[in-house]
Image 1 (tube, rainbow, N blue to C red):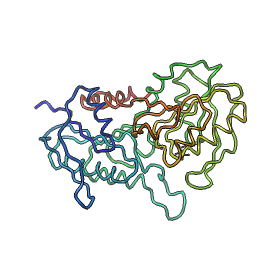
Image 2 (image 1 turned 180 degrees about the vertical axis):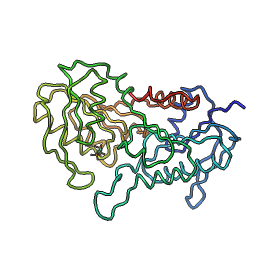
Image 3 (image 1 turned 45 degrees about the horizontal axis):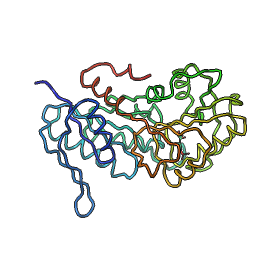
Length: 312
Ligand code: R5P
């Protein structure tokens, strides 16, 4: 029997599901995700999935119901005798507590990995994990795509005499270095950032001479926007010229849209791994579609082709 790609999603990634379907030219699998009267989530798949190659698309940003929907959909597909179930998690939430760096804290990323695996996923496809080592929290294959090709297509190859990439913290150095290479071997500056408390940011130092350069800050997540506010101010004080902000996952929580709308930057560029309704987008925000990258990866996984050509 020729196995087919069967695509489903929870409610956090409905728009993305449609885009991936359109990219791959597939019809949606009929399924229900709604609630019982008390608020519990109810899932039902309305088509036969026996022996099929099932891909469940769901980002796991808050509320935790998004994660719960993913787990329930995986369980439903597994119990419907799918041949293989791939959890496609464009934004892997609960990733920021990924080690025991203080007393009495959970390793949330490991717990979530355990839940996804125990629910019955055979493999995971995700984009720009907060830290690459989260792949090792799973004992199933994890493909961690980089959004670099999407940004490179939008920004083009840039002149290293005029442009510089900025990593907003030491942890992001490796990712920023890879981006710098792909955008034309651009020089790299690194911000030495401290977090006095969760979601607060303080710039201590900037490594690299940013004076007179057009700067592209690359981060994985924009949450409160505090990292960016501090970064932009510090870069301006050191003579940075035009500043563009790029991030894979635009969460824009709390007052981030207002705060970031006041920032003097050329543009804020994010992808749609997390849905950002127009009213929650800061001024000057551009949202790039992630569906071509995910669509290609899904097709390659289904056809047993290499996915590594997408890791650029
Ligand atoms: C930090 O390690 C991440 O890479 C992001 O810089 C951070 O999550 C952004 O958070 P916020 O927008 O709240 O400063």
